[in-house]
Image (cartoon, rainbow, N blue to C red; front, side, top):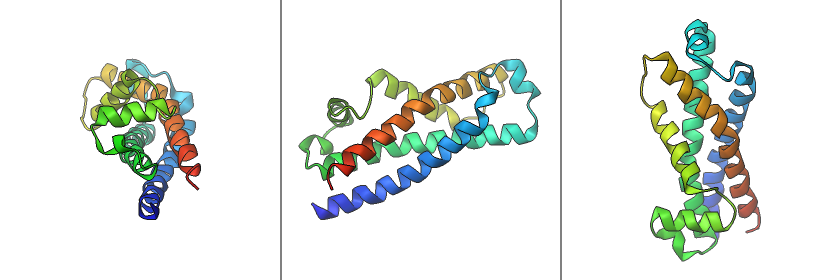
Length: 153
């Protein structure tokens, strides 16, 4: 079990670094939300760059949640940790780590949207507003994974 706990520690370290960066961007940019098409078009280049960094940090943090959940389940010696994603998700849901699957799907869709370049300012505003709304949920997941991991000692 110690190797599983060590892997969990490594994954959590990366996840917590990512979450700290996401938290920083979320706080620094909060005054810009909610965004509209007009506001996006009026933003200066520095703010657009910070918003891009925010979106990438969101994407990275959301992407790290899955390996963290898998590592947590394995460290808990849960057989469902090595089954399908839905089995793992159900395990994490039963432990209070994650919310409904619909929330996860929305968060994942936002992460995928970050990988594309959109010329439409309305769509950019919608994606960034979604990220701003989903960030607290993502950070709660990170916190819950950390709490469950701490129970392992």
